[in-house]
Length: 118
Figure 1: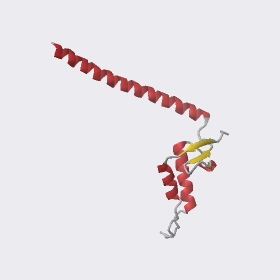
Figure 2: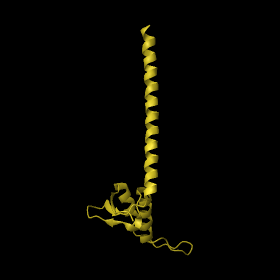
Figure 3: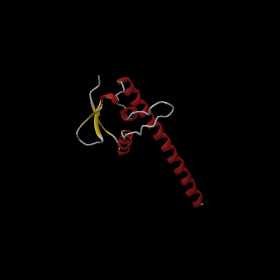
């Protein structure tokens, strides 16, 4: 099992959770009751867990404020390694693209300056 990790959600994430926990009016549609407040809250935590990479069933408050909590990460060491490798490669490719664009702009500028000299 992974060690418990501290997380901080954004204010937008907190607002989403708080909205999901609001009471739901009891209006029966088609003979079925709407989802309960607890079901909505659990679904919001599960979505946040998927976004931030933690098991939503393991969330505990840290006492540092509403946006801070601890949970057990959901990704395995293999998943983490693959994700880090993928992110490193994406970063490398983005740097190559950025540098290529800069080189192209500088080459064009150089050509323009050389043309204006004559």
